[in-house]
Image (cartoon, rainbow, N blue to C red; front, side, top):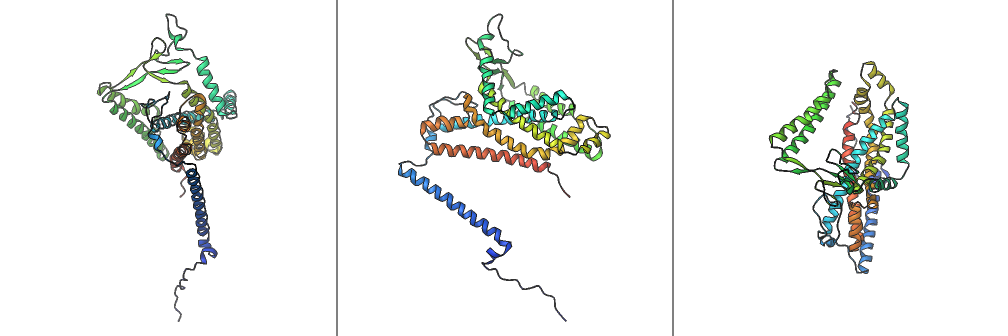
Amino acid sequence: MTTMTDPPQASFRLSQLIYDTRYRSYTFQFIALMLLIALMAYLGANLVTNLAEQGQNIAFGFLAEPSGYDINQRPIEYDSQSSHLRASFVGVLNTLIVAFLGCLTATILGVIAGVLRLSPNWLVRKLMAGYVEAFRNVPVLIWILVIFTIMTAVMPAPSAFRGDTPDATMLFGAFAFTNRGIYAPMPIWEPGSLVVVLTFLASIAGAIYYRRYATKLLYDTGKLLPMGWPSLVILLVPTILVFFVMGQPISLDYPKLETFNFQGGMQIRGSLIALWFALAIYTGAFIAENVRAGILAVNRGQTEAAASLGLRPGRIMNLVILPQALRVIIPPVISQYLNLTKNSSLAIAVGYMDVTGTLGGITLNQTGRAIECVLMLMLFYLTISLVISGVMNLYNNSIALKER
């Protein structure tokens, strides 16, 4: 009679790190990592030694010194006596502002242009094709300069709004488009305004939840709930009610023309507008091609099947085509967002003080701390790129096809 037993376990041997396929790849990866660490350590030590021989060292104390220069676009309080660190922070905020506005506008333009490129209307289809080919085949710097020239050379001066018969008039009595930028009303936040803002944010979340619930209900049961007016009601009614209950805590400060310029309100400088729209229109042309490719990747039978059920073209696009196309669209769009953010470093061409203009420009030239400034610039762009990529990858994973 025989007894079935497990074979004896062989003891681990160092030779298995090379000859055993279970460990070989880890061995080579570990060796490569050690070599990379050694190389970086050598380069770092070499840099420190060379700097020491020249009487220099890597230090960041200069960030606490007064900057000594002004910044035209200031989202926070700043003057020439503020520190270099605060000047750099102002530049970071300016970069984030133009990156956010650019990505948002580019997405809207790209989706509209991408969908219209597949329109059955010949004229619309050709116009969108012309937009895509014209903007993505010309360097973005040229578009920045073109739009900035239009803002400064074509727009009227503030003095044109003066007199009994002015050459230019304010839009709705609140917006003035001049060669110095756009003057618009500025909100004044009084006590209780935070409650209104939080209510509005909660209303946005509620509208998104309702639309998702209506879509899920449609997919599960076939029952179609209206999305347009209920979303609008959820978005506006609670905020308006809280606004009046709290005693209208948010008011507007309108720009008024004084002797030589507008006073009050909010000024959006021409440099920001030029950079914002140039980056958005340029990147939107690439996103349009991503959207068109994603839509074409969806089998035509999906459209025909949805149409045979009586769905209108708009609902077919929103409920059938785009949800499937997003799996193809999102990955390349992430790259476009990263490109737009990095292309914002061209802001210095029109005098918009982003982080490259402050930390990598004036601060670097005044202090002579080139290595420190460049290292901080690299760290900022690396961080913001990783954040954008991480957030978009989370969204991409949420819409990815789930297999059983």
